[in-house]
Amino acid sequence: MTQEATALEVLIRNMPKAELHVHVEGTLEPELMFALAQRNSVELPYRTVEEARAAYSFGSLQSFLDLYYRGAAVLQEERDFYELTQAYLERANGQRVRHVELFFDPQTHTTRGVPFAVVVGGIRRALDEAEERWGMTSRLIMCFLRDLGPEAAAATWEEALPHIADLAGVGLDSAEVGYPPGPFEQVFLRAREQGLFAVAHAGEEGPPDFVRQALDQLGARRIDHGVRALEDSELVERLVREGVPLTVCPLSNVKLGVVSSLREHPLRRMLELGLAVTVNSDDPAYFGGYLTENFLAARRALDLTREQILTLARNSYAAAVIDRSRRRRLEEELQAAASEL
Ligand code: ADE
Ligand code: ZN
Image (tube, rainbow, N blue to C red; front, side):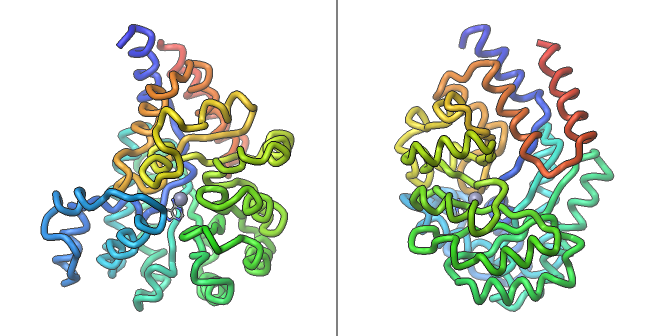
């Protein structure tokens, strides 16, 4: 590696990061999955950790989701959710993640009979502890599973109401093709009326029009993935003009076949077009890397410049749901990390 490339990698490791697109269920490493399976007497489709990892080869979003939902079935008690979240936060802290906006999918658990309060309670306890221990700030975002439909989402919203103080936002995830955002308009409206911010997965496997629907019908203030927006130049112009942040997940896109290889990934092009892109890890336990690994892999494959790396970090602070003083603090920490090199 050249001296310059080495310096950029040090910068990536040292810079304060904000992670805006990570599913807590997607941080379940096989080791913890096995430990919880044993503790809760749940049967897994693998005999060993190695066998689990070997099975993590996906050709599409659906092939991933099948294993992801199966794995999440080991989560049953409050302490399981706490330990899962705690393990992710510990790693994130080691990668200088200073702010995280964490997704969780209540329906994955409530449909198995795990109470909403158990899920939120465990996650919340770990997030609060991370703030106390490391000053890591966080927001919790509840996602509706789009393939279960708008009525199930509305019922989940009712279940969430007593816990609204623990939530900052609502999102939309799971299988995208065949499940447009539009039908979720009412439940998103209700959430926004209660002061929650809205985000939505759109334009990962689905068409550019799903990105438009997420903005216009759901009031989404950030789009998760959004890479397929590039197929529609008018939409790109709008996203640039309105400064809509896109939470892009490079390793995820390769693992799920959204792009054929990292070298083909549009991240650099998106930056050059002036889109407000950020780098994120999505489901790091399944896709082979946490936030730092996503940055490192993208830099190598796309030859990102120092300025582009700094822009990605700043974009993530700008897109985060934080106040001005917290944003200024992150920018100052970035300045300090950048000036050391
Ligand atoms: N749930 C977890 N990861 C997801 C992804 N990449 N797309 C849609 N739903 C998800
Ligand atoms: Zn996602």
